[in-house]
View 1: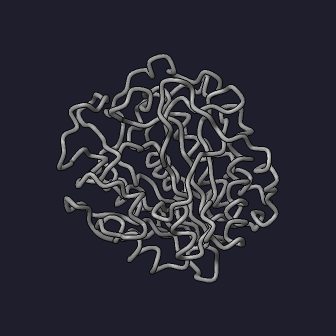
View 2: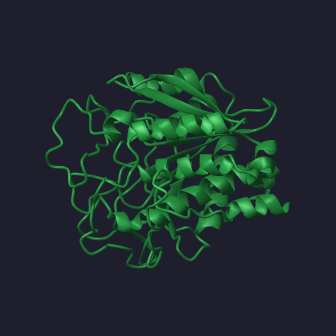
Length: 354
């Protein structure tokens, strides 16, 4: 592997929010073990998170600055917000990876990490990685949920800071249960104008889970899972496991990352399963620890954890894109899946759901 790609694999987020350069970096101490803010989950606030308008402004600015980047509107949400697709497409013969974030509007730190990754791709350090791979990013599929702009009350949600955020879209529909019927405009936009339009080889679907899942007695920083529907092509599942191997080796080895195997079902209404079957795409679910808001105590995580979770997202995106670009993903050792323990939940939290 050349030095540039080696450097890209270890990129770290320097601040807690890409759009707030003045914000102090969040501490990374205790990212595993008992985890930051486990006792009471800390101060749960949305004030440090990018609004939809801030995200759009950032993307348009990067589009103007980056010659390799193209910004496309793929559709609108229930409330009429444009849904954006970030594209780095230089050669249809190259493999393509899609990063999908915020199907659930209360799971935003993956979006923050995706925006930081976009900024990194605009630097000179990204030249080699973009030479070997096409990259697609949907940085906020559920913008209405992210902004708390819903046709149902959010009075019981926990976060402070000016807005609440909900898992559901404006019609109180879970978008990650709509990948067969495709009723909602957000899932229609994704399938009609991304999945069906571009030849995609890999996809990582980035989510958040609760705060109290553990592996080997220590709280996890996240969990991963490949397609588990019996209808998925075994070759697709094998490639999905390779994608997971790249993520595991680059995150679990850091000292601040600690990953478990996610407890997931086989329903094809979920993107991890449905997209693998319908399009033959290798898919990986990554569930980061802690949500930005929730109505259940124990699911949302305080802002002091933002730094390491954003860093974990950037590491995941950078490492997988680099492994696909240089071809090393084909040699990824998937044997770790045989011994990776399925995470369990500590008392006080219901089972997580992707």
